Amino acid sequence: MFNISKMDLMWVSFYSLGLMLLAMMLIYVARFKINNKVLKIIVTICAYLSLLISALLMIVVLGGSNHA
Image (cartoon, rainbow, N blue to C red):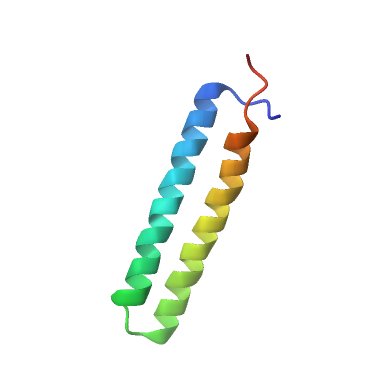
C-alpha cells in the first residue's frame, strides 16, 4: 500500500508504540498527580493528541509495504 521499506516501517511502529506509552503516562499523571485544573486539561489534550498520532502511524504500519 505504501512505498516504505520494511526497516522504515519498523521504526514507524516503534514511534507509534512510544507515543502510546507517552499517552498512557500523561493520562495517569493528569488523573492522579496534577491538581491544577488548567494544567490537567493541557496534559490530557497532549495525551489524546499523541494517541491520535500513534493511531494514524499504525495505519501506515498495518498498510504494509510494496517491497517483497
